[in-house]
Amino acid sequence: MTLLSIQNLKAHFHTEDGAVRAVNGVDLDIEEGEKLGLIGETGCGKTVLGLAILRLLSENTTVEGRILYKGQDLLTMSDHEIRKIRGKEVAMIFQNPLSSMNPVLTVGTQVAEPVELHQHLKKQDAMQKVIGMLKSVKIPLPQERVKEYPHEFSGGMRQRAMIAMGLICIPSLIIADEPTTGLDVTIQAQIIELMKEVLRDSGTSMLLITHDLAVAAELCDNIAVMYPGEIVEYASVRDLFKYPKHPYTRGFLNSLPARGLKQMVGTSPSLINLPAGCKFHPRCTFATERCRKERPELIKVGKKHYVRCFLYD
Amino acid sequence: MIEVSGLKKYFSTGLFGKKYIRAVDGVDFEIEKGESLGLVGESGCGKTTVGRLILRLVEPTEGKVIIDDTNLFELSKKDMRKLRHKMQIIFQNPDASLNPRMRIGDCIAEPLKLYKIVSKERMNDKIMELIETVGLNPEHVNRYPHELSGGQNQRAVIARILAINPVFIIADEPTSALDVNVQAQILHILRDVKDKFGLTCLFISHDLEVIKIMTDRVAVMYLGKLVEIGKTDKIFNDAKHPYTKALLSAIPVADPDVKRKRIILKGDMPNPMYPPSGCRFHTRCQYSEKICEIEEPSLIGNGHKVACHLQ
Ligand SMILES: Nc1ncnc2c1ncn2[C@@H]1O[C@H](COP(=O)(O)OP(=O)(O)OP(=O)(O)O)[C@@H](O)[C@H]1O
Ligand code: SF4
Ligand SMILES: [Mg+2]
Image (cartoon, rainbow over all chains, first blue to last red; front, side, top):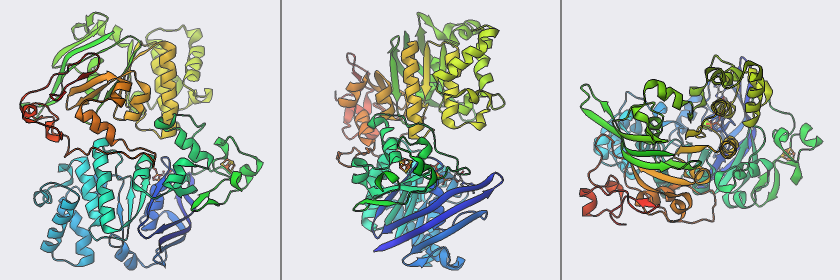
């Protein structure tokens, strides 16, 4: 069953320099139990898309489209209703745990927050739950560590605490924004294994936002590739790696050190001044007149494989 | 060409300087002329400090760095300055190496003037030549760093470094802040200029995939010490040290068909203020035995060297 259905989502920021069109007509479905990876280069709008789902974007933003969660549109809900969903039904793990945790509150208090808010547990009972949760994310001596502050945790420990906070109410969907970025490889490996395990146990769906394809390949079933503001390809992990279709996806894969370190010309366009037609056309070796003028739609090229490119029209 | 021996650096912390962070705690290696040596390890293992010691940007607690028969740490300030222009460093963050108030062209011209490398008349030609070598466009010369992307700034840094005709460069995580595609471009440039100018290179990175394609030999560092050193293909195909093996198995692979057994290390990196007794890795090692807790293993072997009791 479809858990979350994003339909023609747009998120534009109004700035002095003009409108920053960070998300530009995104369609994306997440099924129950599915793990979907959203990958793309820095600044392509991944985090903005994640924040838009939970209505966490700042005031200067215009958000359009529909985000149906179990059939209800999150964008038209009252503030009261969205607060009941946030942290309980749909939780978020933020890109940078140090800056998204409150430095003056103990880790225990912060992890307990969603439980107190949504499950109306007493402080003591909530803390018992937190200790159990910290244990399941393999934080040693949890009954001691709940009393510590975020800065007393190592980077890996903080990330575990964030995961614990995200999963403590057993949400249906977790949005994890770069949960392993900035961690050392051996710690990253610990966190990847941990996430596999806890998601399997809880049956929670995940939207994993990352620039690291390899991390997405390990944790996800399907992958959506984002290129400034749009999804340009969607496929199962296997199909994406074995049969990438979009010229950008191919270029991206080939530029990985393990895959030949081939260079792709140019860089991503500015979101204030996006090219007309296919956003990738200035860098694409296959671009035609049509690509310069017309925006390609997502075209179905296989069972659950979609690509936004005229080559497959 | 470069010989590092017994290199140590303790940083004192605490009010009375009684506690020491043993950032580098006895490191030995050599780099041959024209060779590229990779130094890998996780954050806080001391790899950046090794790089900075070799350039004498920090003073060592103990040890020698011998370059062409002279011990760097015995040189006077004046002689050091002369040598330094042959040795250059590329940092992770290009902003640290570019003056934000200077146009890119002026940033590149600065060392050319300082070291009187070309005459005034040839200055512009030389700048254009360098700009081209690193794949920037002539119009970038008049821009300020904040008007360029991270990748373009990193190219400017490389151009500025090449201006001085260095013989040895240290690249400290030169692409860690960049997207994969831009990383690919920068690594290509580094490889090209390295070949073209026959540079000797110390390539510091936590990214094993990058190390694999950029180096001839690799040294693996853990808590201030080397645990293994050898030819790059040997390290990647036939690693001996349990830490190196864990590090290699931790790299996520972008291929759903590759199934491997991953070695998950216990716990976190210990505090370098209180490194574990014996082999520093024993607290996280799945093979650890009694001797590992007591005696520190030394780095031994022929060519491919390992510091492990069980080898
Ligand atoms: N509040 C805001 N006002 C104006 N522009 C913004 C705002 N928040 C984000 N942006 C811009 O929107 C674009 C998309 O940003 P976003 O953070 O989603 O990128 P990302 O894909 O998550 O990148 P990264 O991989 O670096 O995390 C960027 O150009 C960013 O500068
Ligand atoms: S639509 Fe045209 S420009 Fe865009 S990726 Fe396909 S061929 Fe290239
Ligand atoms: Mg982001």
